[in-house]
Structures are given as structure tokens and as C-alpha cells.
Amino acid sequence: MDTTDSMREILIVDDRRENLLLLSSFLETEGYRVRMAVNGDMALMSIARKTPDLILLDIRMPGLDGYSVARKLKKNPITASIPVIFISAQDDVEAKMKAFEVGGVDFITKPLANQEVVARVRTHLQLIDYQKNLERRVNEGLAEIRKLNRELELTQNEMIVSLGALMETRDNETGKHVVRVAEYSRRLAELNDLDRESIDLIHVAAPFHDVGKVAIPDSILNKPGRFTPDEWEIMKTHAIRGWEIFRHSKRPVLKMAATIARQHHERWDGSGYPDGLKGEEISIAGRIVILADVFDALSHERSYKEAWPMDRTLEYIQNQRESMFDPDIIDLFTDNLADFLAIQASLTD
Ligand SMILES: [Fe+2]
Ligand SMILES: [Fe+2]
Image (tube, rainbow, N blue to C red; front, side):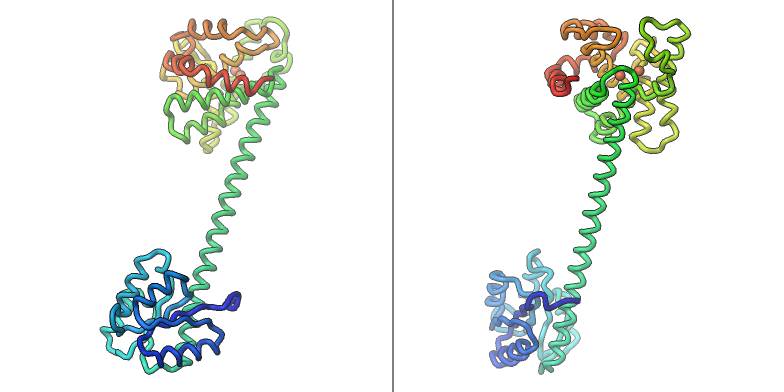
């Protein structure tokens, strides 16, 4: 252990000047910087000015005794970790017990053998070094773990957004659609007072609502004009297909993606697909994404339609109250319309 990086400073507290001078000159020749105090109050003042690396503390002094000084030091978080070695002519067990009780790390009996003092001082400074080093390494490790977690999270989010964008490209929609749906969904989740974790899960998983379209043949997916009834049935399977992609995952975000994929074409009145769920049988995440997805599809151009003006879009949504959408979510949406328009404006195609 390197103890020479800077000179260590030791405070010696003793009411006997001759003791102070002898000990300090010896410690100085051993390479330590030494400060001295002749009583408890002076010691505390000196420590308050500058924290020493270690304190050699006499017990019996006029005024504040060594025990009181140690107690005060331990109470202050700034000084609590300074090692205190008691020095005393008292050699009884009781004095020693008390010295350790008030937070001393060691006890040296007078008359002092200089070599012994130096050996103990060195040991305790090394212990402090080990401890600090250990703390530093634990903190570095924690910082590294946090960095890796953050990295994983960012990677996950980027993969999700890229995959969403890829799906939408194949579907002749713009990649921005999934990002907007994610942002609308997050805002709706917040307005629904969901907990932080659910809000984040919905935000990250919402772009996957149409992931099942990867299983739909291009000839159907990109067909200009109307679907035949058979084609429509195949098209509708994308909800279940999307769910199947993630259903075995134990990751909360992918479980959420599975739920959203399966439920994003359900309707509040039970007339949706694939399960015909009704009302709150549809999860809150599903109900949120249903509105976010339709709102975005209506207000933007698609291969089969023009972008609708906002008043027409809002009228349509109101007309679908209790048929397609959860009325509470419609209310949250319309009461906070400015938020959604701001998201839309920041993510134009
Ligand atoms: Fe869909
Ligand atoms: Fe969509």
C-alpha cells in the first residue's frame, strides 16, 4: 500500500509539553508531519481547521479529557473516520475498555516506546488506506455497472425503435409513426397515473404493436385496393402473430410488447379482434395504444387515405366513444390535447 503519496499528518494531543516534543520529533524523523495540541479544546479547534490523518490522544488532561474529545469527533461525520489512538499512563482494563467504547482504534501505554508508536501509527494509517481503496473500488464497480445498465437500456430502446421503423417501412408507413405512437402512449400512461415502471414499459413496447405484420405476405400487406374476405382474415392474424413473437419472454418489456401486439385491435365494446375483449378486459396498455395508434393513423397520410384535418380526427374519436375507445382515455386525451399536438409537431414525417 502506498502511504507516501502525500505526507501524512498526525495530531498529537497531550498536556505534557515534553511528551509532545519527544514524540513529535521522533515521528517527524519517520517522515510524518506533526501538529500538536496541549488540551482537548485546542485539539478540536485544530481538527476543525484541518483534518489530520490520525490522532494520538492523551486521556487525562485538564478541561476536556481524551474520551470527551473522541466522543465529539465520532459524532461529526467529517471527523468520525479519523483513527484515534489513545495514549495513557493508566493501564487498567477499565480505561482501555472505555477508550474503545468511545471509538478509539488502539491504546498505547505510557511511558511510550517510540518504535511501538510508529509501528501502530503505520498500521492504522494502512488500514485506513485499505478501507479507502476498497471503497473507491466498490464505487468504481458500481459506476461501471450503472454504465453497463444504461448501455443495455439504450441498446434495447434503439433496437426496438429500429425494428419498429423496419416494420413500418415494409408496411408503407413511416418510421415516425411508431415513435409518435410510443410518445402518445407514454403521455396517456402518465395521465392515467400509472407507476413509473409501467409508463416506461408502455413507452418502450408500444412501437411493437404491429410487429406481427412481419408474418403477413407482401402480396397482402402491400396490396393496393381492398382486401378479399380471406385476405382480411389473414391480415387480422398480425395481432396474434405479434403476441406469439414475444409470448415466451420473461422480460417485462417484451411481455408488455406481447400484450400490446395482441390487444391493439380490440375495441371497448367487444367488437374488436382477435379475442373480442370488452371494456377493462383490455389491459390499460392495450386501451392506451388503441387510441394512440388510431389517432396517429387518422391524422397522417396513408397509402389508402389522405391525412385527416384535426377537427375531423377529433370528431371521429369522440364518435367512437364507448365503441372503439375507453371513454376515460378519450377524456384524458382531449383534456390534454395540447400535449399530443406538441408531440405530433415535434415528430413530423
Ligand atoms: Fe395493427
Ligand atoms: Fe400502427
